Image 1 (cartoon, rainbow over the protein chains, first blue to last red):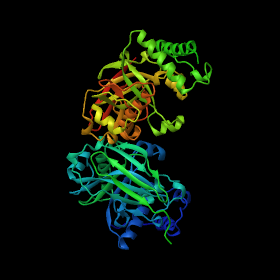
Image 2 (image 1 turned 90 degrees about the horizontal axis):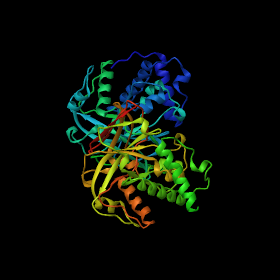
Image 3 (image 1 turned 30 degrees about the vertical axis):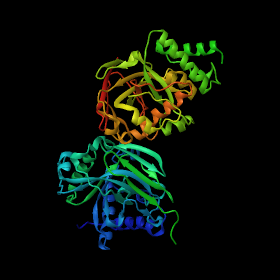
Image 4 (image 1 turned 45 degrees about the horizontal axis):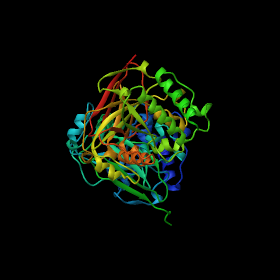
Length: 268
Length: 262
């Protein structure tokens, strides 16, 4: 797609990219440019994604953020946001993440939808989503922020690809009719100690509703959710900070466990 | 602490419960040094008084079962109290807010054992093997203390804030469910107020029953077969108001609801 970028869009995208190259969080974009709108922030996000695609990465799907009441209240918003998933962001279930791939990571347990049919808004309902879903798998999302100390407003996180970092998926697909997504419980452990628990309904009342929101939101930009895309539907409990040597796993009712570790030392 | 003091303290909280009037915590003024062991003596005396008044014990209930709450209270053990027959609310019925001081609700998983469990050394697996059924439940807690402001000994002496229990009728065998990932939502008038999963209770609700059996064994008591047991709140407690329709849903374990009127 072609996007009409202003100079600022590229500048702001470059600003966020500095965090990646310097491996240090940068100042919030909203501090540099207090008037920036959420629409402009999405343009910054798209600019970075297009550059990644030009350099050979592939878009594997989307992620939905700010799906819980707590997070929406914290940022003073009444709708979620979304970001893009790239193949370079995927980690194998049970894998270990080297510390140079992350800045200030946090881990969340989520449900990932894998579509078998395209979903084109507007007017997509949760039932439409379920009908178009091939399967769900459990997922861990490693969220990250290029903004120093996670000092983000809505526009900051949107510009920063909805604070995406890395993600991993379970390998065993489950059909939508074999699971009660809304009442599916989840427990998130770090180094063997329970951190928090959640339930499917934590994501806008129903993870499928989050995907419907995304399909409808994207339709405003002429984008369709494609068959085969992976959609991370939103955290089921609050994000947990990850540090060197930490090991995480999440248990989901009726689904397999997903796990990930972080390297103990930065590789030289 | 002598017998008269124990009796006086039990009467203090018992009267607050009967009069539906909040009181200052025991450790504020009456007996600042109240220990956990002394608090359980006060609870025993309170229970004796309730039995004397003609009430019956329905079953035990667990409290302070989340890591967060245990940390907040700076303790290593959960606590227990007892649900009485006059606290039972039938599913779908109404309660009157005026029968309580400042009630809150918590969704829980209930256990019914097929055989007695006697500690010490009872494990989570022992509990699962001894469990005949699990069922959904809502506990109504109503601390007799001002603003739910209490120390651990205070709440033990107050029968762990026990005030009501709504037992659901969706009975399941424990092996039919993964109890630690039963997802729970608590809604008031259709809006989700709090949520969580079974693991919020000591990593596994059955572990809570094991801890109960092991704690009771110190007094030479056991957890009895056939009694409904409340294993501990899965989500944060939510305050009730008149006009509320309270509904809790449990993944694979049905739901429970009731009304609140003036």
